[in-house]
Length: 197
Figure 1 (cartoon, rainbow, N blue to C red):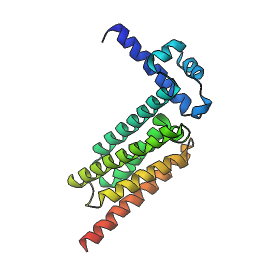
Figure 2 (cartoon, helix red, strand yellow):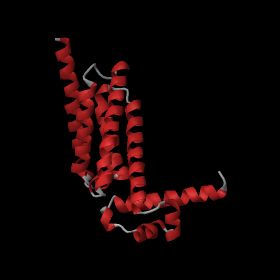
Figure 3 (cartoon, helix red, strand yellow):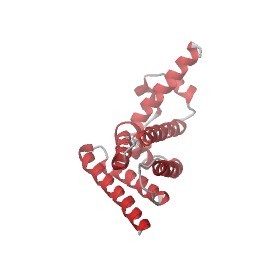
Figure 4 (spheres, helix red, strand yellow):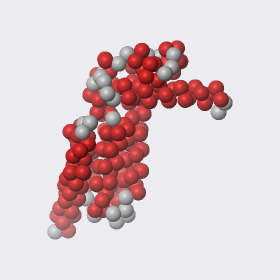
């Protein structure tokens, strides 16, 4: 990569980081392109070299946030080797990343309608990936056999709800993680007991 390409990439990254901060703290309509360029410390022309308009930038921020959250959660899930911490580890990775880095709650609720509607597909992708990881955990002997399809939908929905409920106040995080862990471990154990009986 040439120095010019590297500089261009750094400028784009700086704009995306500034835009993420702006859009994760204020609604789409409250943020102007002037706010974005001021926050990024770039000229208006630099913004337009990378993004055709505010909506294009917003979509790039949403994509980046979703990728960050999915990558962080997937890495933690794959590294978990103990069933008793499987759900807790995954929930903690997802919620902490949501609250501190991805911060998709405002992005998913206060953006343009056509962009908000696109958040359904990432949810389904999270569900698919989590189902694969549940099935892998069963194959590795980390979790007992269970209905991974049902558990994945319920768990991803619970994570989304917990992140929204905690909002910007993570003081209840430990108790929420404990509740999610107990609830889903119990569900898997109950289902296993029913299969054996």
